[in-house]
Length: 193
Image (cartoon, rainbow, N blue to C red; front, side):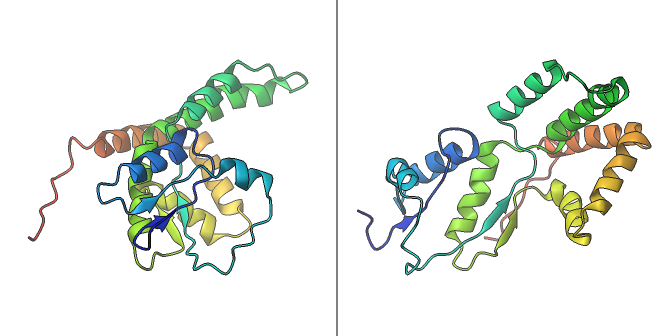
């Protein structure tokens, strides 16, 4: 049973990837501020949650691309799959333009589950966390495109333009982002205390 000083955090899907990284990080908290319990069986069997009377804070964590086993398996499966009935031109664009670009975006902008767990822990520990939380500042322009046009056509047209008209520029830009985001060129932050 959780003590009064502990927070109960419900993590759905914590068998691998981001969920597992968050669960491990919270379990390793030196101050034991989080209560963990295997509620998977009970929660999955009872699809209605009847505890709305509890003081619940909700936040949305938006990580963007994530480096996980799922991502690697998905790219491998999609690249090998036979698309019976697909016209050759569409299949050509999918395999030679879209897949390499998508993989490049994931490599350039992707974070590890542990990076996302750190950001999530900060949100959990915040007394009044904002509802929306981006974990990756490099992903901000892409999210801004989605918010700028609710229909989604702005982001689709922008990606189309970047992919087919500015493909080389996009690949060079992502390579530069990979280099800048690796941490080796970042200045060390200096604490005022």
